[in-house]
Length: 387
Ligand code: SF4
Image: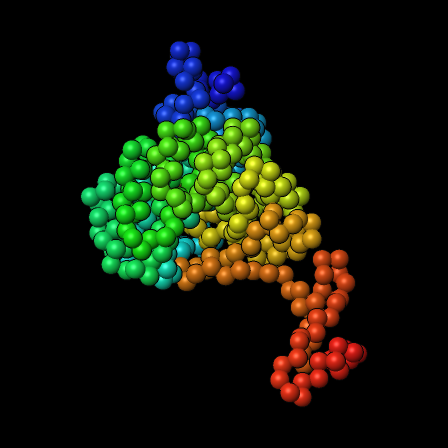
């Protein structure tokens, strides 16, 4: 607990005995430029960025736990870059968008986004334990609305009822696990009562930013609602702490599959070595690396984004280094909300006449011969042909 002392200045010692309680962490989150300046040695770009955040844009919130993982004096720290604003957020790059996934245009009902026929996103709160500087939903998270009541969600739930083709409901926000357990449980049960919904997913970053939130009370409340999947969001191996490991293992022990979506971020994790360490650490704690996401073009995040070519080069160098369970799909969620597209380095050297020449991770070219298809198809000739 002592490591939280650095960031919890001004808190009485009796209160500090509660530092492993998730509510204490939320109550004592750093939410101001002054709080940041007390906790860290800030650069001028961070001082100006924090002042700007207080006036406009994405607000600041960092739990004492997550801030304790950050470097006190190094602004290039990968934890710090994810949660401490800088003045570069004021710069818009070409192609930046307020709403990069076109969620407003795809709103099927209030608080409900539908971009695919069989699944929807239910936005249950605007609040998160930590506001990530690259957040796709920075246009609305932390805007003060708080948790959405069941009454306010009624039209969204009615819509799901009326559309039996929807099999999968992703409860997101903000972070639904930043809500009180009873409130979250009421929303999950309301979704579970819709007979055509097969899978419920909770999109949450609390295993990363507030791992003490994974309490027995929470697990007891969620367990009756299986199949319920947890979609979490680790970006750097330094985030896989003992506390995070315990949170992930408690979820796995309670039967919740835990999947991870990493966002590729410049200066944070844009290296094959860092991602390899992250994906290996996640598999060790029974979390499946599911997606590596090309960062969405959120307004003011150009300094945190990589190019697609850089991402492809990293993915190519991970191929063969990691097993299939540790290697996520590299995905670009297309601007405008038109759906996810997998991105793959080009492993096909040549294709035609039933032969495909493939390049392996060691650079060797190998021919795959298609099986016979119909009379007169001479597969034997194909197999022996010199390319
Ligand atoms: S936890 Fe998720 S929703 Fe909240 S700020 Fe971070 S990325 Fe955005």
